Length: 89
Picture (spheres, one colour):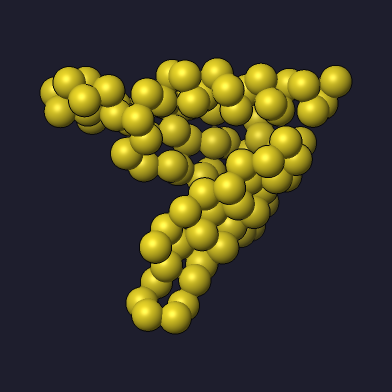
């Protein structure tokens, strides 16, 4: 029951831990410093899946958020980058 919500100003990642526990990470778009893509092995390349990693300003709690097994990560990275760029302008 994990899901991600990306808005022009905030990225929310909800991780279901157990039956009723959730771990929620929220990152403001101003904090995102770079976005990276990681592909592991041949199956990721064949099925065009990959991990998208959002690097943020350093703080004690969270400095990176990873979205795993994303379909067509290059297109998704470009879309998120455009949303962030248009928000900051």
